[in-house]
Length: 172
Image 1: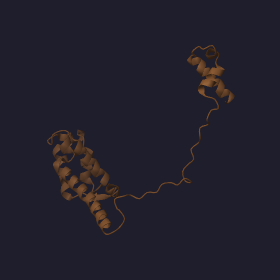
Image 2: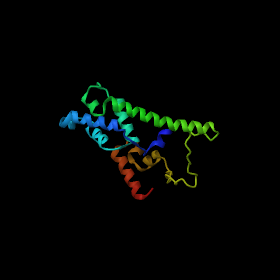
Image 3: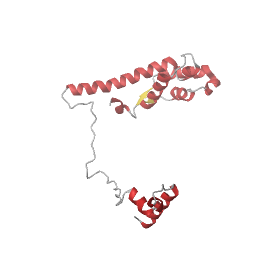
Image 4: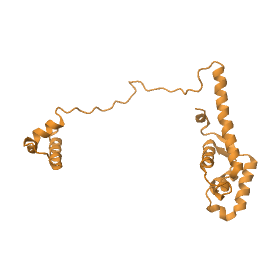
């Protein structure tokens, strides 16, 4: 998958985006600190780079935002300007990976779209402990060990627990 190659990648934040973040923070003043998105916007205004993972989180916010674009929460998360930049950036980065894979495939290399992986062989797999198979069925155990069943009476839960405990003590 192309996106896995973008993990742990950092991108420079354009000056106009950083300036937009600062202007938004300034316009809200102290009141902005109580609005969701303040910390993210503050970080974007201060830092000079952003991770691929942070871009995905910002895109996720905008994709799932149900309010109006004039809502304070929307604006404090960067508004349309940040949304458009994030979508363009992610789209370009993902497309560049796709195009490189497509060129390599067309050049005759093995399918670039399938990730290589190795499975552990039988000698490498950890052995699972086997569960011992009882010599008698549950019915035989209950019938032989319970006087109520010998008399064709339904055993109580207490009778069943006593039989179980007795079997556990005896190791059978």
